Length: 296
Image (cartoon, rainbow, N blue to C red):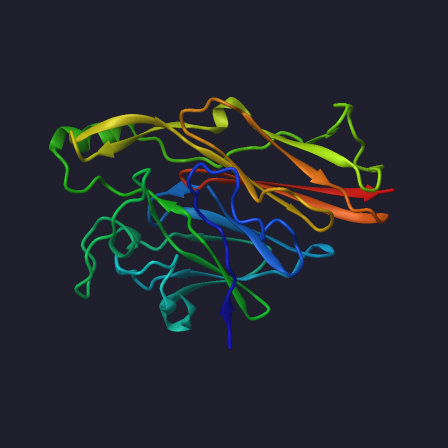
């Protein structure tokens, strides 16, 4: 029987102390499913890739890719409906490390604000006003899902707001990460990834350009106007050895910070280890970074 991996896809509330069971990589895990571009209109071409890791480092097994076309009722709380596990409700994209395919033409009908067939109600937007096309990655009989954002028209809004949205909205782009900085937690001195002292406390600093947190507009249904906003950011931390105090650090949309830090407690035994960062913006964009380290 095939199962779906648990995969964190969307930004959580701005909470620096999230579930701490996820940061340690003790089994095969899909850390991210990435779409380039991060947002596009139905029928547009996107390129898909996945960050797949395990206790020994990155895993190069190519996924089998597919778009899910099983509509999701508003009452369904899971990221996708069980129908996305059914091969009769997918658009097959083949198996490769990266694949390129056209987003299904009826994405805004099945997963957006347009009225879908079968008696389903239209989907509600997320808190940023977005809608998402599920994409499935299958590896060794396990499923993981990503959610490329799809650009749809603004539903149920005054004509002026709809016009403003069409002319002012900018599709999301994936953020970028600057090189991960490692410093001694006690002294602030730079630490070489090739010579980390066993048992050391190392400050990890993830940073991104200021423009990575993009400005955009969303619809406010109260006053029925389009309002300016700025993306929130979240960094998820992962390691194959040692320990991390938190799984993720969140930056609110009104916080202009362009970096986040945590402390990695290096293992007390010598050997190789891997660190990963996954940066997500609140509209579904993703950047990842990998660093191989040596503990001495």
